[in-house]
Length: 243
Image (cartoon, rainbow, N blue to C red; front, side, top):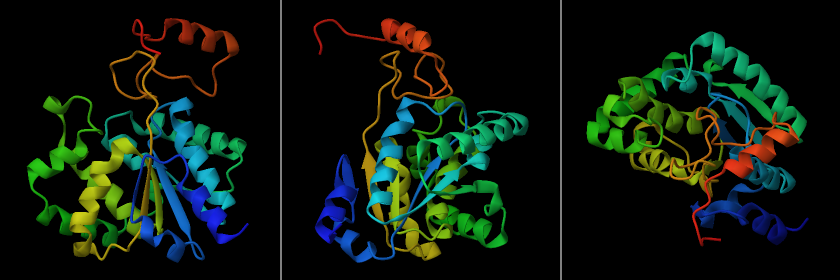
């Protein structure tokens, strides 16, 4: 595959690209990551970023998948027994999809002193208001959000550095978090990267935002049987006269 075809493969089906002019520079030694909260089953909403990772894999980019176990816990999605059970399911799920990826658990590197040091450096430069804006897509109940959920975006920025990637794939709902990283990245010597944002598949329940593992009946799971899928589709939100 020639460079131009790889370039178009990397770009296709994205909603926005930050640092698009750097794509060709990074292609020869490209490494991409996408992070996933393990708060429930892999579902149709994850498929958009997974397909994008497959595109990059075809273009010769090395793929890393972050199973964000500590993020899941910090975001109050479950205790450690729940999180560890989910991790095993997610690892099996990604292996079955066809991604030849390096699968990394967040806690395998996020507890190291230099990681924590960078989090604190960023915390010194970010106002509470800015932190809250970045976390709004993370915390569903913003009125009762916890400090742990403000730490979450800082960790996501640091993950880009520690995973040593030059491509980041993410849903467009994570944009504020990564833009925060671009603003304060110099504090931690964050490397340049291309940010590829994909569209979000809306919840089957309509006005609740995106499909989410932690919201029942909002998603179609890879574990659903045909009859389950049929029932969910029949119950899905469908506003009158809108196609």
